[in-house]
Amino acid sequence: MKGKSILQHPDRSTIDRMLQTGWSPQKVHDWLFSRKKELVTAQTIASYRKNHIDAKLILDPSIYALKLKQLDVQIDSLQELYNLIEVQKRRLGYLIKVEDQSEIALPDTRDEIKVLRDTIIKTVELEMQLGIRSKAAFEVIEKRIDITELLREFIAQKELMAVIDP
Figure 1: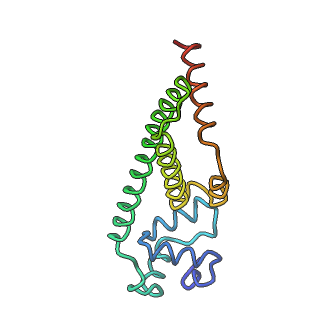
Figure 2: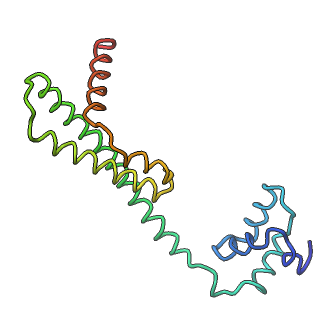
Figure 3: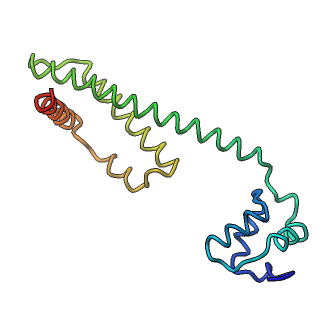
């Protein structure tokens, strides 16, 4: 393709976005080649960028650094939520085991269940923000779940594993 050929290129909008977000002409060329798209030389792409892409539309690379830093913070937060859920499961497991053995309801158990539920909801919301989980899955979690029963099953499985693999 020569000269104004990018103006009629089937992937022109994609090429524009790539150039606006800081892709080099060679990188755009390589991307087109790797996807078996209609090829354009890196020189033509450079010329197109110079003559057809408004310099004001090209984003500053620091924007990406800021976005990536925010994403790192969210991912770190997500891992902390996962860790907290595991701690809460163990705490609840212990409380439920004590309740079962003593046949007395402990006042802390209900509060710990609420903490676990809230932590799970926060985790799911963050997963949805990050695109890890679809929003449809959240509707399932909002339904009433008997967490006590789930925890009893967890304790039973854990005890079974301890017997099988001491």
